[in-house]
Length: 149
Image 1 (cartoon, rainbow, N blue to C red):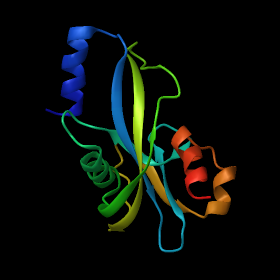
Image 2: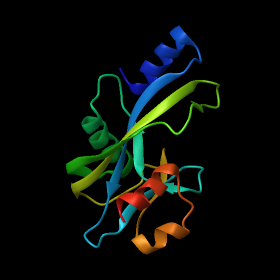
Image 3: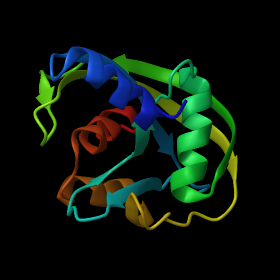
Image 4: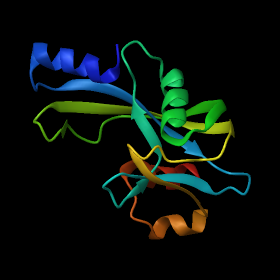
């Protein structure tokens, strides 16, 4: 069952009440130490490639799937940096409430050429570390500043 089907079925049972969701974020650098950032469709902030786990999917498998789906890169090696707890209770535009937990990974091996999927991501770009503080960043983009310091 896909993530969308799982969440739809869950919401049919519990309505908009809060649930815990687990997702991943990928800290990917090129051989020059530049950080790969993504800009989502209809957004102006830059952040990490990220996504939610599907039912029964491990965070490691989610990382590999999300990175490939969103960027066409293949992850060959990664290690867990940190498990981020929710900053607050979040609410989707339809009123559904959730707490988002994110397993942040440093990707240490990958191959391919980054290509945004065009559905979720509008743009992918490697940025020098010095440019990051001047960018409009998402919460995960700001966390990447600390992880790359």
